[in-house]
Every structure is written in structure tokens, then in C-alpha cells.
Image (cartoon, rainbow, N blue to C red; front, side):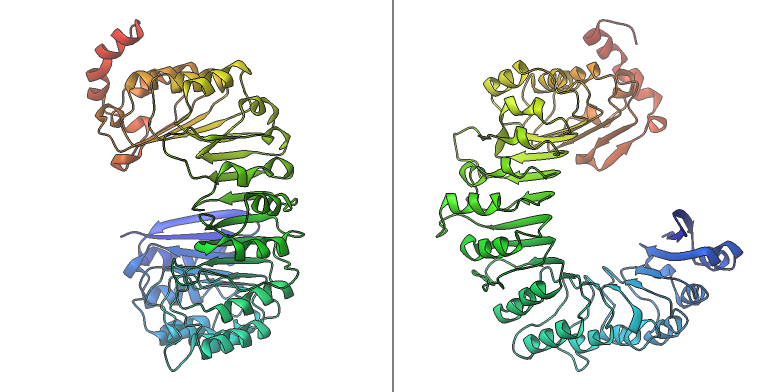
Length: 492
């Protein structure tokens, strides 16, 4: 496999080197590499060997280093020898390197950069707490950390683990971002300590609780200073989540949350009031919230600072999606993604800043007629339709959003060719993506380039293929020439 080494050059210049190990060594000897401040090595597998580490070690001024290589074909001794020369590092990542263990982490802790490291990403590595060299204790060697990511690590937070977390959070008094996503053994006591740290100085917290581990969260401090909260807790009752959201309300800017609303003990009005209190939000995502209904979202129209809104609501069998009223007041909204609910058609023209829109295809003909009656929305540049594409839906999209430059169709069936032909009325369409579970073979061929002259990219995801214009074989065009001539009534 070819090694991919991307190096960032101060201030904003990027260099990409695509060769094997010997190329990376040769390039490290070039004079212009002395201007590099960061290097990123990804998807290299066994090509980054001990000789490759020696090449990296020559860049003693590096401030950022990512070695995300899945496996480490070199010994901890070689790893430590490289780190001895990288005293300027401020960012280090081994994300997804499963063979990175506590022994490698100890090498990093003993290196010259340890006291100054500000960002450390050890997500999806094999650091653990069930060994003699406890990962919690080793992490105490990085007092300057501001961003720490430990997602999907084997970290035990029970018994002595909770005390270790407390010691770590007290020691890392500069910590601003913490990612402990999907830590299976996280206990309620440990989580209470994390929330207390959020009140002290933490600004971003990512937490994912596996279903069945915890059904209720501990009460938070009175005020949390979090600006970003990603809370994936689909099995946790909303009654223990809402106090956390209320504590974050004065400072929260980004919220990505999932929690249980089905058979919960809080009223629909209480949920709506809590969401309405998050007046400073710029981004809001509510997904995998079992029992989420239209009534819970009644106050979204008051969040006038929103730039991005994503809601996946639960759709009752046999009933059309509910409509969210008041979204027209969200003048700053740029991206709107709705599943199980839909906007009031009268609000669409008022969303003057809207550029990206995602709807499910369960909109009935009556809703589509109402949307067409309010007039076109030329400000929308990107449209995604999710579900089963019905006859006339893409034609309606062309009339409703004449300024479209990108169309994504994500369906669980086939897409009729005639439906796609309706998109030829979009003069600026340059990106078309069709992801389908059906076997519409013609979409995986090149005839569409003749119909859409401005098209730059065609993605037929169900076959895992992306077609560029220069890759289209001439026999494909000849095969469909007669068919398109009959359909379009004009020579090709």
C-alpha cells in the first residue's frame, strides 16, 4: 500500500507526498521541509518502519504529529528514540492505531514534549487501566493538555478508576476538551466527577453511553461552562438529561444529543421549555431520541442564532410527518436537516440564509403543492431527499429550488430514470449523488454526462463507485444514445 504523508507548511501551505517509505526519507532531507510545522501519516500500515521514524525524528521543530497507521511495525524503543528529538510537539495523535498500548504511552510521557503537549488523541487505541502501568496514572505526565480524546479505549472507571479520574481532572487544570465517547465501564460516580470538571473549566465534552449501562445521569453542578456538548445516551431518561442542558444554557453553542423521551417522566412542555432556553445555540442536532415528537420541538423557532439544525423525530405509523411552525424566524439558519418532521411551507421563503436542506420523501402531494404555492426558494444550493422517491418529487424540487447546485437522493428502492431527467432544468447542477438499495444499473453508467453538461461529479454509492467524466467509456454513451433520443426528442 502506498504511504500517504501530508505535511502542513507554515502558515497555510499544504504538501502531499505519495510514495513508499524511501520517498518519505528522501523528502525529509529536502531543505524546504525545515518550514514544516505538522506532519500527518495515515493509512500506511507496515510502510512506516523504524527507518521512517528516523526520518520524522529529523524534523525536530514539528509542532503537530499524527501517526494514524492501524499497526505499529516498530518497537517502543524506536518510538521513544524518535520522540527524544521532538521536543516542540504540541499536538500528537495515534487515533485508530490499535497496537498503541500503555508501553508506547509511557514512552510519550517520558519524552521532552510531555510537559508542553496541548492536544492528545488516543481514540481507538489499546491503552487500558487493567495493567500494571495504569493509563490514568500515565496521563498525569501531561499537565499542559487542553484537548484529550480517549474515545473507544479500554478504560475502567469503577472502584479505583473513579479516584484516578478525579486525580487526573484535578491535575489537568487547563483541560478544555474531553472525549470519553463509548467508555463501557464509566460509572455514575466517575461521570459526576466529569460533570464537576465541566463546571470548573471544561468547554467541550463528548460522551457516549452504551445502551443499558446507565439509565439515569447524576445531577450536574448548578452551572456548566460547556460550549460544546455531544451526549449520545439513547437509553437514558430525559428526566436526568434536561438538568444538564439547563445548566449549560448560558454558554452552550453546539449541542448534539440523543436521549429517551418514550415513556419518560417529564412533560412535553418541559422538554420544549428546556430547548427554548438554549438561546445561544449555533448548532443543534437531535437524533436517536426515542419518542421525540413535534410537541417537543415547539420552541425551536425562538433559537434565532441557529446556523445548523438537524432533527430526527419519531414518525407514527400511518400518519404524515408533523410540521414545525415558526422556523421562518431563524434568519441565520444555513443548514436544515429534518426526518420525521417537516417545515411549514410558508416559512421556507423567509429562511434567506438557507443553503442546505434535507427532507425525507414522505411529503404528501398536498404538502408539495403548498410548498410550490409560496414561490421558489433560489437561495437553497444543496438538497437531499431521503426515503422512497415518488413520481414527480424531483420535478417539484426543480421548481421549488431553482438555484440547486447539488442534489443527493438517498432512497431504499430504485430511482426512475425519468425522475433524474427532470433535473436537467437545473443549469448550475454540478454534483449528483444517488445512493439506492435498488439495482438501477443505468445509474452506474455514463449516460448522464450527456444530459447534464455542467456535471462535475456523479456518485452511485450503492455500488461504491464514483464516476468522473474522463472515466466514462464511449460504449456506455452509445448504448444509451437511442434511448435518450426518444425520451428527450432531440439528437445527442
